[in-house]
Length: 152
Figure 1 (spheres, rainbow, N blue to C red):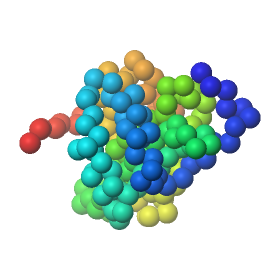
Figure 2 (cartoon, rainbow, N blue to C red; figure 1 turned 30 degrees about the horizontal axis):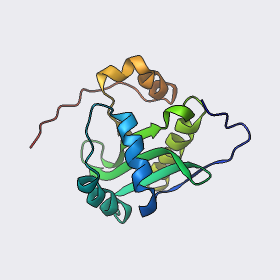
Figure 3 (spheres, rainbow, N blue to C red; figure 1 turned 120 degrees about the vertical axis):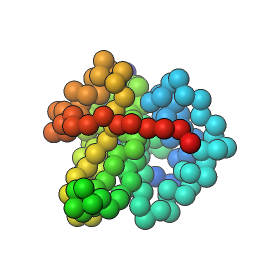
Figure 4 (spheres, rainbow, N blue to C red; figure 1 turned 60 degrees about the vertical axis):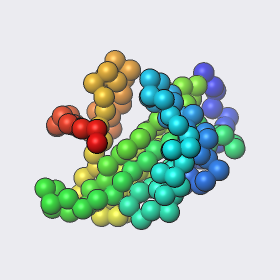
């Protein structure tokens, strides 16, 4: 664990130079998933300039220690705009220090600024034992649906 008591953790928009550190965080979020940086880079770069996606980084000095990404969309079911949290991860050494809460708070604030009526995310069943479900419930998220997916 890292003591961040005397450190200034900043939340900012990601930039192209953050790519490798973000990939390292993705590997912590999904340790069983092999990440091909060459295939991931175009998607990362596209999101940086997209009007429908936002990437935020939490930094400790020059080091990226947290990452959050959202996608904005219009939804008829919710009668307006909603934001979907695609990823939210904090470096294992920096967890339980409020960084994830700060990142999530910034994402929620952005959703409010953009006039969204809802913010959603999915969380794998196995993450309940890691405390992820409790984290989201502490931040007033409720379990309301299953996510079904299909590889194309």
